[in-house]
Image (cartoon, rainbow, N blue to C red; front, top):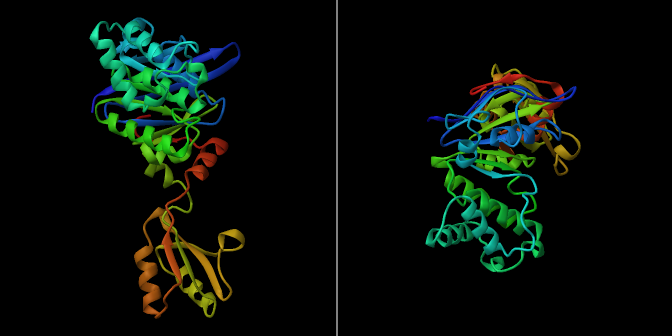
Length: 327
């Protein structure tokens, strides 16, 4: 995979405020990068610098080899950009707005209509194509913004909250579109919807206070959760204490805890407990073999894969700085 976006010590200051602090990362063709962070973390500022809408204070950003400072027009031509609350001309119909964007992008004649028809279909805009943009719902306005960002079929896509305001069906459609486009593009998605990371992203970075704190695949991030690969078992309460003691003694297990409150979710006479692995390794086989060896059939048994929201909180609130590949 070739690097389509390269950031090296990219920094942006507003007076005494350092909004982006020496961020370095690469995004390759074929990657969908989830750009995560709390409000005010520096996500949108970073994306605006990549697109050439903000001038870096220091450091460099290159898109397809073009420097955002010295070749801004080449960068803008290479990028499809969906900003937060993508601005449109409200009095234009959707078709007129997309035709306007096509002409700005340098298309003319029959190619304008061909491009508009393509994105109309991709963004599912048939029912609103003749309506003024200002009359549309938030979800449809978002889809119009998405359509304009892909109209010129760019090789680099920068999207700030692409599914904001969409209903579940529309989110599914947009995520499917992103995955379909990903094989020959580099796509960066800023999102607060952590489920989106697992749904569409091949890689994710976490930024807070302007600093890049983590970089890896969604699976890499989930491994940071203390419950990653933990095994939850629910079974008859009789003899449970001895079972828990026996499981705790297995060499692959770091500890066993009995579930209480909402986490227990058990009926009368049933208890639940969680066995946590050492070093995040899979323990479902030794746990299952141990129970079978005792002739115990659990009411329920499953593996936890971790929770992205817990990982996000640990990294952004705890200041964890374990950047992985690409940082």
